[in-house]
Amino acid sequence: MAASAAAAGPATFLPRLPSPRSPSPMLPPLGRRAHPVAAPLCLSAKRRACAAMGSSSSSNSGNQTSLMLPFSFTFDEDSSSSRRLYRWKRVLLKVSGEALAGNHTENIDPKITMAIAREVASVTKLGVEVAIVVGGGNIFRGASWAGCSGLDRSSADYIGMLATVMNAIFLQATMESIGIPTRVQTAFRMSEVAEPYIRRRAVRHLEKGRVVIFAAGTGNPFFTTDTAAALRCAEINAEVVLKATNVDGVYDADPRQNPNARLLETVSYHEVTTRDLSVMDMTAITLCQENNIPIVVFNLQEPGNIAKAIVGEKVGTFIGCTRDQELNGNTLVQERRLVNEA
Ligand code: UDP
Image (tube, rainbow, N blue to C red; front, side, top):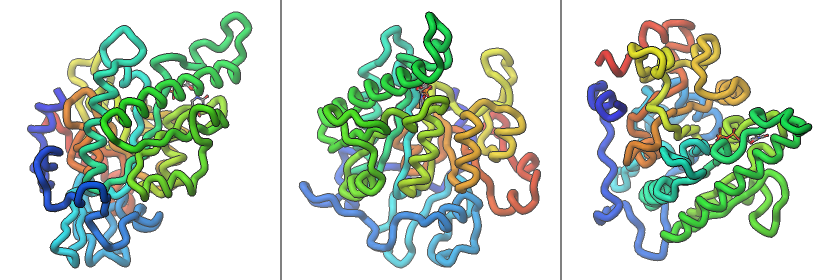
C-alpha cells in the first residue's frame, strides 16, 4: 500500500540514492571516512527550526534553497563539486520493538535487524550521521504488566527499559557483523555491556562515523522510547526523528477499522495532538514541537524505506509545519495533500 500510495504522490525532486554497491564520486577512499560537504553540516537549533517551518528567513537562506518544503532536498550551492545526496546531516532513527519483531512470532526477526543494518550502512557511507533509539515493546511493555502479581508500574517500566537494551545489543551485533562501527549507550549504567549515555561522547562517535544506539529509553519510568527519541534528538542536535514502524504512516482514521482511512502525507503537530492521531505519545510530540524537530513516520517493512527516510526522500508521513502554515494557523488542513487522492 505504501509503495502504490507513494508512487501516486506528487513528483519529488530528489535524486535517487545510488545503490550502495555502485561506485560513487561521493564516497571517500577506502579506510577513510570523509564528509562530502565541507560547509558546516549540522543544522543549529535555529536553522532546524527554519527547516521544520520551511522558513526562508534563515541567515543561510541564500544557500539553502530547498528547505522550503517537507521532503525537499538540501545542498550547498557553493560547493558544486560536492553536492549532497541527502537532506539530513544527522538523524535520529526510532525503531519500535514491534517493528523489530516483524511478522514473526519470535521477539526479534534477524532479517529485520539485518535489513536495518544494510540500509543504515548505505547512508552512513554518504556521510549521514545516524543515531538510533530502540524500543522494547516486542519483549516487555511496562504499562501492560503493571499490577500483575504485585508488580508496580516503576518496576515494570524498568523491566521494559531492560528489554530495549536486549534489542540494542542484538542490533549492534548485526551492524558490526557487516562492518558498521556501532556503540550502544544506555540511559542507566550497565558498563559491562554498554557505555553510559554521555551526550558529548555520543556526538563524538557520530562525528567519527559510528552509529550510536541509545538504549534504556530516558532511564525513567512512566516515559516511552518515543519520548527518548525526541529527547536524544534534541540533545545531540539531530535534525529529524525518523519513526520506523509497521504501518505506512499516519492515517486520518484507523485503517484496520475503517477501509476508507487515508494516509496523510503531511500533518501538523497541532493536528496530531488535537485529533488524537496516535502517532507518538503526547510528551514526545510536544517535545518535538517545542524544539521544532520534524518527524517522519514510515513503514520499516518496505525495502528501501529506511535509507529513503534517512536521506530525506519522500516516504510515509511528515509531521511538522511550513512557515506559512505556522503563521496562518489552521491552513495546514486546507493545504494538506492526501497521498491516496493524488
Ligand atoms: N520505558 C520506560 N521509560 C522510557 C522508555 C521506555 O519506562 O524512557 C519502558 C516502558 O515500560 C515501555 C518499555 O520500556 O513500555 C518499552 O518501551 P516502548 O514501549 O516505548 O517500546 P516500543 O513501543 O517502541 O517498542
